[in-house]
Image (cartoon, rainbow, N blue to C red; front, side, top):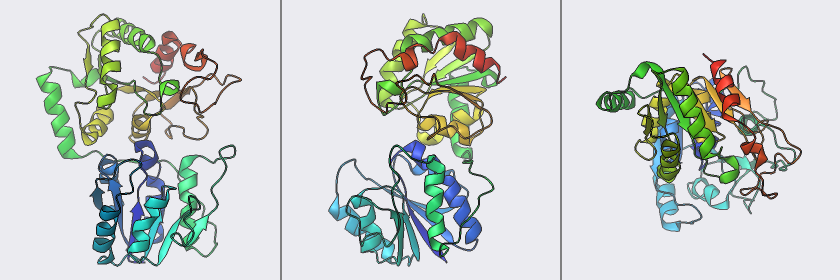
Length: 344
């Protein structure tokens, strides 16, 4: 096997959890070049993976076929003569490019009318009986081994920090006069919806308590542009602490990776940034509400998960069907602070 193409997932957390598959493929085929076709928003994850030879960025849009773009990409990829392609999203459109590019082995999970587009496949597990996502992706690697089972020494994702991104973050911190020795990153967003977001008031109280406990602590609120207003509310309710900064929407993902790697600790919801912190082995407290930490846990021995495991959890709903959101409201700031203190 000389060259392998990966069609990347569309979400940051899922992308992080594919890294063990890349590492396993590199072990199986040490001389192979592994390239990744990824959307612009997850491409930085693969630039942080040692195993990747080239990241091919594409301006994919959610829920759009973009037939012309896919045909053009397939034409370009045909010239690279890939022997195998792992199609990690489950969608029909994600399987089109390797099929159009005539890649011989097209590997993925069955689903969404992909018969013929995928020619080496596994049955998609039900939502009730889903394995952890890292194992879900790793299982695809066995399909090139003629049924021989592979045992993995490690299923812990690992990312690297770009020196350029780190320097950029250090410059921003210097301009803001933030001491790099005591940075705490709070990630208040979660793309999925409110049932994954710990309440704003709880984040604000935690910020106040953390600064009262450690006057040198500086809290940086990190996330995308869509999280900016949530972060503003947190800063406002924290009585505009001088030790809190809202960087949501003001960093690239490469810079966010670098900042998380520099932090003393991270407090996050179940989100892509949570998985980045785990892959960088940054101490963290991960707060789970409607989702299942058995399925998408932060894979790090420096991570502590707080999940109440209520009878109604995990519901996997975007809005609390019972209207009380106790799975998150009942996780109190003092509990998170106490857990955070065990990481120091």
